[in-house]
Amino acid sequence: MSIRSITFHIVSSDVCGDEDTDDCVIPLFDTTQIAADHARGCGWLVTADQRCICPDTDHRHRAAVDALMPPEPRAEVDGQLPADLGPIT
Image (cartoon, rainbow, N blue to C red; front, top):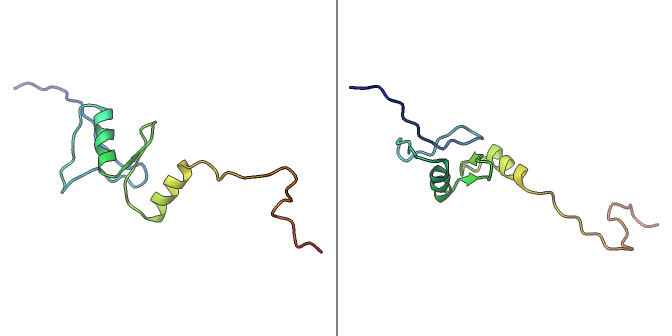
């Protein structure tokens, strides 16, 4: 019998640390791309920089997804009065 090193990849949530498990079996993947594809197929969000967010919907997970979103666009038209002006008297 010999001792050898085996490298594999697993997916875990950057928010809560949960792992992409199916009935307590942790899938092992040969590459990060295969792991990311599998996670996406199971409803996980995987960003371009390999950050993973599991599909839980509690406040922490929603906040993590919201933090990835761009800011709301502000539509301004030339000559338009700003919406934050008080009542016109």
